[in-house]
Image (cartoon, rainbow, N blue to C red; front, side, top):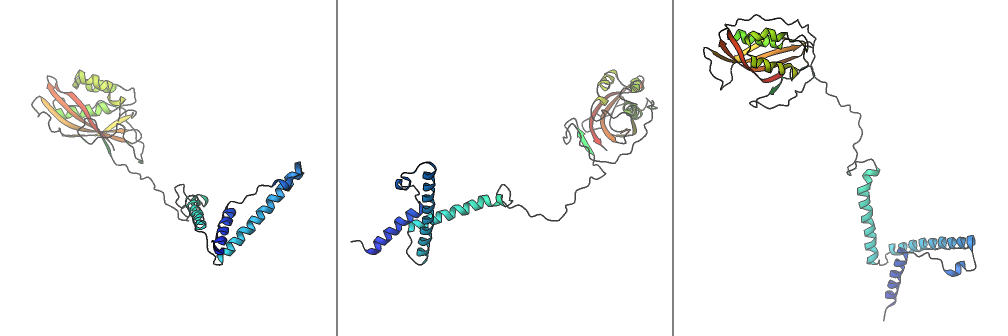
Length: 287
């Protein structure tokens, strides 16, 4: 036979089920003979009373179990499940509710510390661009850094003195005459260098040069200095009729900016003296 304790325990289990799943359906006898509004009011009153009774029953059950009565293991599992769900919800949604980031991390606290901002310097590091693939490769467009520039007065281009019997004099005069421009339509340089520049090179210079980087848009310009250095390794050795060197030409613009343009030049000695036969732009540097 089932003992009284077993019957009480089974009754408690049934009560726990009813407490977890209260039923508020309205019996037919509550609304019998009523219609419309009166029927709805009677149903609402019954549900309200049922809810109150449910609250009282749950309260009494919890008090009873708090006094040392045996608890149904299934009830413990249900409560643990609810607690786990609440903790998980707090972990995922708590930071969003209290100002955290979208990744669940807490938002940093505001401080009164002022972060100093970097001030651009007034000096610029030279940027070198190579065209022949023999040096470090750089973008076709140089990156300019902020630099304090002072406008300069550009004198009108003049035909530099040249000694055609001296190869270095011809190379230097060629560099100065070709890179000195009054404006973007000035072609006086053609008359200056034509006597000691071969026709094929003249045609190339007419179609390139100041129409491309780094000289495009720099007019008016002048040449403060031309540096002559030995030719690159692998270049043909000098002979009585052939001379090769590297030229570094400083081209200064009206705004005060300067570009150092490197050329590999070759000269050939003819009946009228030395002539520039080749001038290949190798690299350029923003000064």
